[in-house]
Image (cartoon, rainbow, N blue to C red; front, side, top):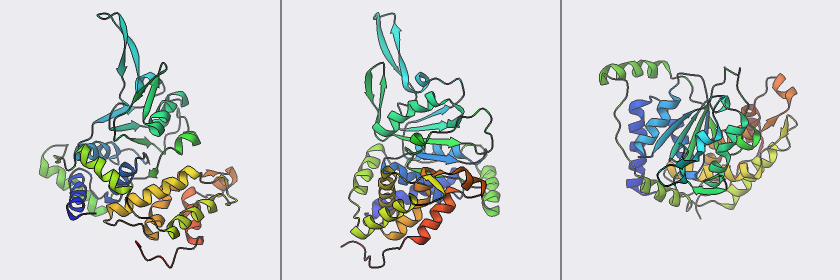
Length: 319
């Protein structure tokens, strides 16, 4: 990565930090997803700035932003749009739904029934929407950030495995540290208003160029082997019904390349794979019920796999 590009990415972190304190690792993962052409699922408690983070991320990157509050009465057409009759032309015209944007926040996605959730599947995978047999292409870049509330399950619908597998990363915001929470209060008093002013750092064209450059990040054969060994090891776990799919294997490769690029390198290290693997793989495991009763989590199992799979030792970086 060139020095100007690295400086711009650093400024992205700086600008978002004005509104969301102490979440550099989360912002970095959002960038990983964006530059990999992927989507993010955020599962965490209310009030941890999930919506603020998504909207600020869009403002700093000059992306068009839309938010959908998922509810039990939400229909697929409320997301994709529908054909409506135009009295002036006496024809049906397509009225675009909120999915036609660059960054879509699907808030509390599990509150809508599966039929409505599935309206996102084609858009997330194919970057297109089909309504009444007509296909409409979505603008690039396109990214979905979906949120889940882990404490209120009454009236919710679990996300099917097929949809979970479409999310490149699943992450948590986490509570701020003591010092960060004090700083949040100080910053609020200093700016004298709720919303922080942030500058646009990148344009859509800049982002598209960065996405192309991620595709040029070098991957050594030992890294390919390391990624495959990790993912195949999850399929051998006796605690799971289903391990990581080949789509998950490819997702780990994509995320590792993007992370290496954001860190200023044009080649992937084993450490990149190991660091991003839990966010890429954990939500793809289908746990056995007895494993859950024993208190095991997908994150614990992925950690065990990473400890067990041998890390390439003769890796010397880009050839």
